[in-house]
Length: 151
Image (tube, rainbow, N blue to C red; front, side, top):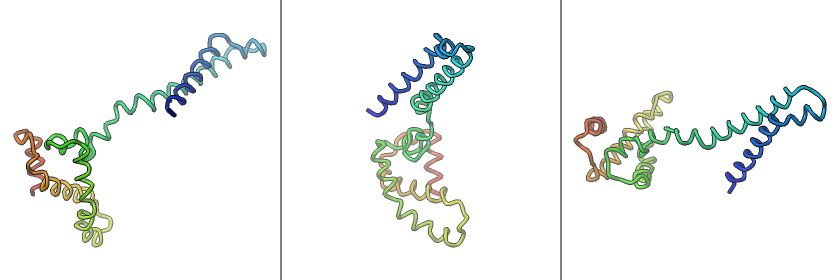
């Protein structure tokens, strides 16, 4: 509902910008040049195009979600036969266990990059409980992934 209201608002802004650029009402009323109408109309149209770009176009091409664990382009989605919700719930269930596993390293070296170790911990735990859901084990990408998490 809210996006519909914003969409209608920016449609109105776009049409107002078009009206200013075509009919020059400010220039006619104040007997000035048409450049104020053209500039203001162009600005309103540009604001509307920015809204459309950020609200509708960029989310279509957003690849960030695909690279997250259990995302559409992640090894979990490619190499296991799990739906996204199940995979995500299983992945998140290991947060506390993996944090405990990484805690000694964090205490010794607080500036260490811990995400790779945490990711590997999550991947091992997920593989342990979903071992029989593996699929596409003959694909080199999945073979490399399984070998990396088993080391």
